[in-house]
Figure (cartoon, rainbow, N blue to C red):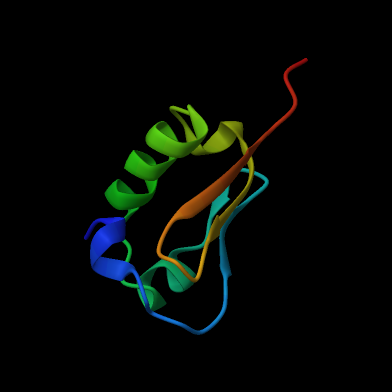
Length: 72
């Protein structure tokens, strides 16, 4: 399910990745598959792997906001 199918869902923003760890329960509650999240990471955060994400939030508008981990 792409973002345009999720627009207007209301409610609150949910953290779906924290410190590289995918929260399956939160993703499932928001009807997101792991494949959907990975696609949004590539498109919105220019990130290829969840381990490179500090924080990813599923926003109220249906988009995923991504904060990359600092590169050492």
